[in-house]
Length: 363
Image (tube, rainbow, N blue to C red; front, side, top):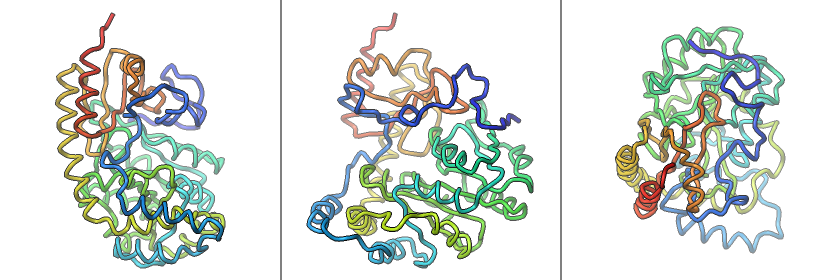
């Protein structure tokens, strides 16, 4: 078992914690980028109905948005088939992660790594202890049996992602229920990030179990599946009213703009779009995986709309020279130099990426 304590970067030859502007992908503002494979948004783009809603929302900018987001709440309640009272909305999932931390005030938080840096960023706001459980590439970056030994009564909060970012590993329902049962017995709250679940097997979602586990906080976002990262809209589902109240008190008034509410309402109507996306992603992910393997990359099997790869060659720098941006994963806790995350995009863009890799002249 590999477990790290504290918030300093562990022994990977890295410097201290990265600044926020260097820890995430998608830095198209400081690079000459023609095609961005570093951000995992839907390659089918934003649904037309959502674009229209955003355009029409301009006329309402002179008015305050609905402080209760009533129309949006009803629509998402119908979409998920959950009570309205179980929903909280945020200015992206990131705002919800921070509200969860401030609401619970955990003294000890467990985060399996590698994973999304936002969990660590939020957890540090509690000034508590952070325990990192390091998954291994030889185990496919999957949780092992010794993970449960880390989840003791002293732990207040666990962050999990399904599928995980950047590895793409997907836990099945049986595995997740085992973790949730254990955490409930130990008095541990579980934040389950399902921001990528629509891209893969939604049968692995814990949404149907939300009433069963009062310690479960399920977080999703409209960002990835509807390709609206600039709108900033996320939501959480929790059946524990006292817990929801604690978290809700940490959210500012009017935290959802009129644009976010209008876009979210239309997104909640796009069930056919989501189903089409899942089928498209599966097909293109298989195509991209085969091409990357042929190009000599080690590809880790994932179920999201992205792939984690390893290459001894400086892929990031060489591709950026060609105007193609991928995610260098060296600054992910638990990874090292040579790991990259590549988004699954359209067939034309995927072919262009593989062609660009094939054209690189290595020294």
